[in-house]
Picture 1: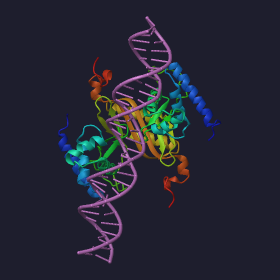
Picture 2: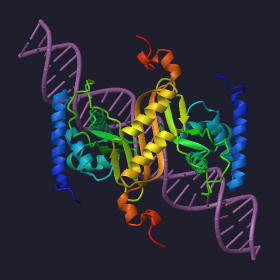
Picture 3: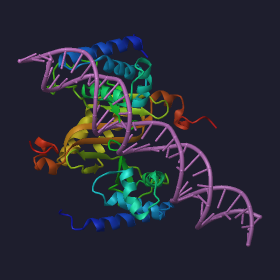
Picture 4: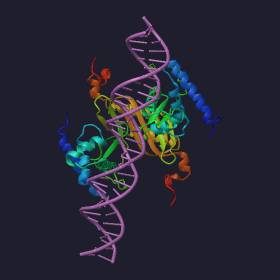
Length: 176
Length: 176
DNA sequence: GCGAATTCGGTTACTATATAACGCGGGTGC
DNA sequence: GCACCCGCGTTATATAGTAACCGAATTCGC
């Protein structure tokens, strides 16, 4: 891609931004939480809690499910990561590193509306922040008197790269 | 309840419609599948697979997880039920009883686009079929060259009834 | 009628995902 | 020092989902 920086650099930036954000909000980005965040960020796909646990054990042999789940809960609350419900997996928030220039005032991450596009062929997961989708959903909810708190919009299909590679015909199946 | 019919009547209609649909498509709505469908339909909330299994055991003592999962897979394929990803639970499809007047030609249920609004207070789950939401998502996907196959749109919040009951302040918590 | 192929579902065993509950140690305030 | 909260280790368990094998019933071809 056209990005002029490697993944390692992005990671460093993202971690620094996360740290800065936690400092501002008073949240404690502990060593464990930073480790789990790093594991999520360095993956190019959403990772399940137990996949993260396996990797975490390299650094922290005694790690158990609650170890990683507690860290994930924290990171979710801070808006540093998202959960992909369809996959029961976790992925870094692409907006976590940005600063919106204002404080939303709820003491935690801004919990922006977002959408995921999950490629069924290569597993890549694209995060969107499409206002039209968010508005359409908000409108539909308002129409039935429903007050939204958190939205989950996830779609499965084929990413541009896999479509170009002809995955439209094979969809991750080996050619016959 | 302003509806002029009881839930039992709705259920009977839904089951009859499901049977008719399966007849047309050649799918076999067996006794087990009908039982599981009835359990899903008679619940006023989405039910997890194991909750369904517990209830199924009353009629079918030997039932085990695969028993209910196989039935659920069938019902999902036929479009007679939906899965609520956020809850890992299953709910009857409100359109399953309708007839769209045309055959979609893929040999199974029409898999219409839909959205769920899940009340965090009472657990009620409202199914929408909002075209604006579906279109917005389709547009956003097209813009990044992503081909949609299946969409999952689920929102958590407060339903109109719970809002009216003042749940906006308490959200299912007992008053202090 | 007989066997092959298919479908449905019972059964066992297992993997994957997630949480409850208890306890310890380190900070902070007094 | 002591109470308190928080982070986290630890054990155990709950919940969700699948793999693999088997037998009964049906259908198809002969």
